[in-house]
Length: 370
Image 1 (cartoon, one colour):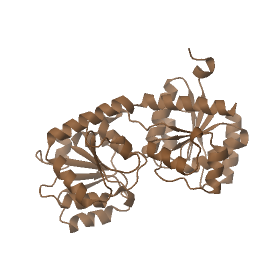
Image 2 (tube, helix red, strand yellow):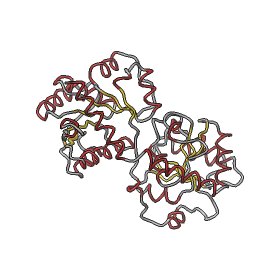
Image 3 (cartoon, one colour):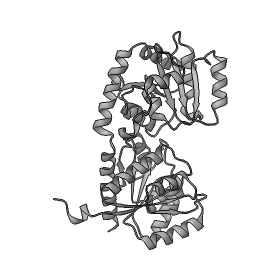
Image 4 (cartoon, one colour):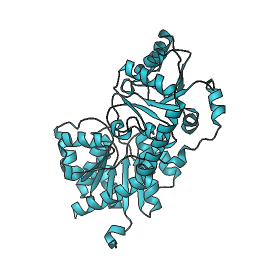
């Protein structure tokens, strides 16, 4: 039987200084929604006018607007210290690198336990600042994949203060609102051609140049649709045209209808050079799509090679071309891997599991500060 301490509702203040709303923020609000459903109180500290602030207010959550302009914003630390001292939550949960410093520093000043979530597949540098964050400010750190957990440990963060809590996906939020055939018609994809979908910011680390080059080498080319905006768009469009692949590569820009695009696709590609986990790949698995992913970061642990998709060397155009050619030509294989991916999501990557993990981590942080 659970003790009163183990079952008592908690008040958690979440600090997220991001202006935009990316995969990390999707996870933040999946967590908050689950915590509130279980009777906990969640307050959100966000930048004024940010997408995070908007999402919190739309949910009628207690929300504090606080400018957090830089890591060394001492005024923000002072204001946040007063906010925490007045609200006196059970735990402060910081969700970004800037939040680690500002929120961790403020919570440390008033003696509150801090939980941090690390999402980046990047080594934690051994410097004074990170030593202060992970040695004094943050009580417990959650890593969203084994690859991220390894980077924490190699950066000197002590194993007893870390925990693996996978990011998750809510399949209910991925239901399409339009028919597959209708979306494919809008994208100008014929019935007999495979549609390869990719989604994410158009920046070098996402590796889309390799994907465009791989597509260009195929005799029977699938249609590649890339959803997302970013500074590399013009260069990627020029590359596709230069390689004679302009007719089969579509740059869709930022989209708010990812469920419809996923429903229209035959497979999903994530050719990243680095990836903490790859939420877009997880979403593709949740709707039954096979995933071609680079063998990097959390993707190595998410994709079961040959079972839920294929893991390929990042930047290896030949390997990507061969894989695309083989999987595009084999609908039965695609369906088999897609179904295996869906089962994997249902077994291990639903929101309830993440909420369970953070509830336990919050209790652990409280116990360490007792």
